[in-house]
Image (cartoon, rainbow, N blue to C red; front, side, top):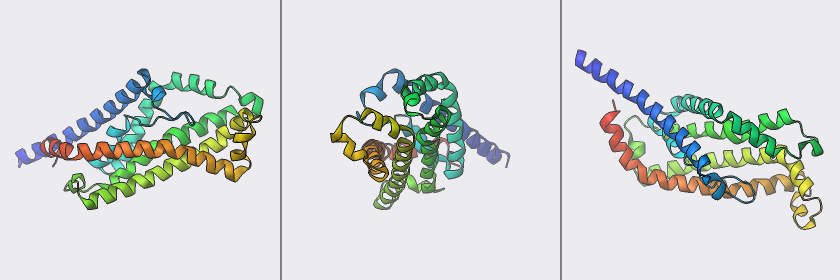
Length: 238
């Protein structure tokens, strides 16, 4: 009895350690990518969004390892750590982004809040949906037709959430800037002739990076799943 309790306690402790390692790895990959300029070199010239975020690989597996609820909580912890460690950079970048705000009369506080909510907070929390695939027997790690369909379904839902959030953010925060920059360019102005065409244009432009990122992530998951399942069963499975 004592042995079984001790073993169970060890497994639980191992899971906490695993969660801490995943969050730390995601944070390291996030800062490594920024410092090495990966987000600058591999990004869309139209939306300035990176084609792939290395930090998403470990964050994706929070749901696979711990389920939806725990992944949601851990993503909040990650967001707090990321915000604290990038606070200075965030404000500098925000000041750079809003160089036209005074000319086009946009509220800076609203700009900051909307940018953080729609570009960072809600999109990252949506990765907790991978926890909906979680099965206690770890069968969700298996690479078969059923699991691939389920995985693609979740990724499509996440892609649509991201594309909509980025489009709303672009429409609310950047559309006045876009119109100001393109005011003397009739060739591009037709895509922003009214509210509907403007939103559709911004939505389509954001699809490029969203689809690319999720396809690359899908490839990583297909490659890593069998290997991570063996490791998880050996050290963390109760």
